[in-house]
Length: 391
Image (cartoon, rainbow, N blue to C red):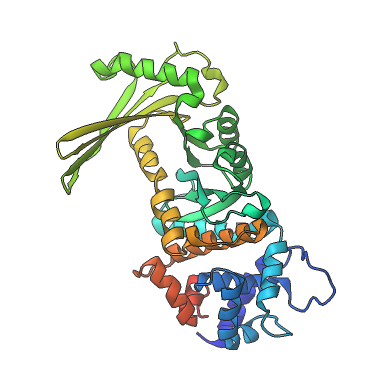
């Protein structure tokens, strides 16, 4: 890739940050904010964990950066990078990526042959950054709530909270940052709230919410209904059923049964749940060394009957755990990071999630961890992952 190609390509990235308000004092402001943020993004993609790593990577790549970016006073120091990432407003910084994420989503849709009218799945779930606590200031580990577009491996937004229990207030804030139209939103039981369901439906999305005892009245009605109808396989009410393939291995056998039925008109209080149409049941059965275990999970949904769609969405929900969160820990070592200042911790967390999305869009067959290493070794590969192609 020629130097002019790199210059043009990086200028397209820099432009995402040009409207962002610079929080620094004008005194001794030597390094343009868009250049510092572009270096931070590239450094995290190339393997850096924080300001020190970003700075060392930038010094090693100064031959590339000094020619491609506006850096009249050279490579910014570690302290400059730290001050910028500690001062930039989290929400404003994240909003710089909206157009970029939308273009990645549209490109992934086209590549997968998914039309704009087809529904996509979005999982909303939280992850605790275990070592981000700051006992000196009485702060526990920071909890990040993210929206994961599972078909395409894209984190569309994130919101930080101090505790997992705050997900109830974080989820509405998160959903205001993203386009809900045409998405099937799956949420664990903590987020099963009347106001959240209403927000999704008003945003022209659909919901599948796990149902537990935190919604005691509805939960009890659903359990009673299932107990009443399971003996005749729900023959008396409109319903659908799907048996998942049985999986065997290492002395274990697992199977899942999905059942979906329309909300009975005998249920009370359902008018509170805007758009509620169906109830879902998933029966997990496992046999380990001859011992059988059965676990039943219940869901409420705004989707009409369609067992294939329901079962796929429930299975995909775990992708945010097994793909996104697992990758953040294995590829980025997020659980071991000790960044304690809240703003920089959240901004770095967003850079990890965004660069993970970029890595997942790259078609190469190497692991995510290997792709990240190669970004640090090979400038051309780094540009490919950033979406910069030779002209």
